[in-house]
Image 1 (spheres, rainbow, N blue to C red):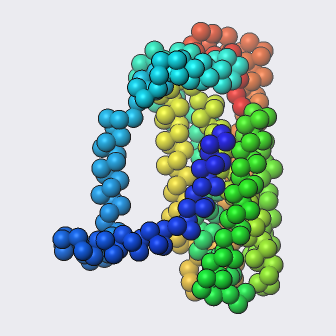
Image 2 (tube, rainbow, N blue to C red):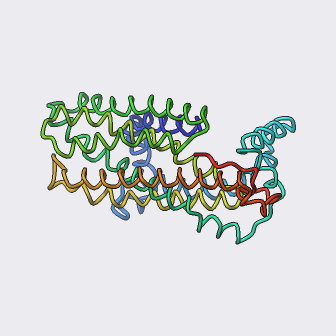
Image 3 (cartoon, rainbow, N blue to C red):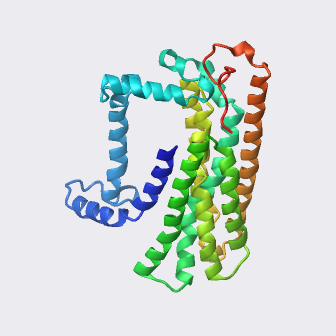
Length: 326
């Protein structure tokens, strides 16, 4: 969980690097003897590095990445044993991990992931969050410009909301992992972004708009680690978890399509409609998170009351020993 928070923070930091890196790539590729690359598909030569590199890495990773810690050849035997013990210890209530070492693929596990209520509740909430995240960088420069800053000064002022959000994200990830809660953390973090969007959609003060970007970035980014870890924590065995994680990301990343169309240049710099749409998505996401918290609480209560005793020994999230994270 802390790793997810650090990853988000590193991504924010790395966003300041691409310009000189891309310039270097451009200079190198301008001398590469592949004239057919230049201008193909409307892209410069250096841009073609990334799809080719991704294709190469995806092929190589298929053979190099282990299926699990027990197959990780880069670990010493004692390190693999330690990793297995830690994974088993992280299983909520002691269930859900032990059987995964010998679990075989079954389509029934895939279907359990696809038709899980938790998959769709968390994925839909995450969809709203990513709609806001992907569009955040579209209107932030217009606010900085209206403040009177240009060029390098504008870039520096645009970094500050991300820097604050990075710190908040790390703190959120730590608290979420420490107290073993996910949805409850999101019920506290999402309203921060909701307040920011509600104000920025209805104010014409540039200074207030800039101040609200701190709330928006903090609420959005700090909600990502909990929602990513939540579904994974509550899905067992291995093939159901793989299905739910992939499906959650596929649904949520479709928020990028929304972000592209709700902030047309013609509506700037106010972007009332775009802010209102994201506000609605985040508000709906908050209620979806609340519904999933209530659903997980009900499942835990039913297990405590013996209603899932028929699944004793299954070793997955249906087992009564498996407790769902709220």
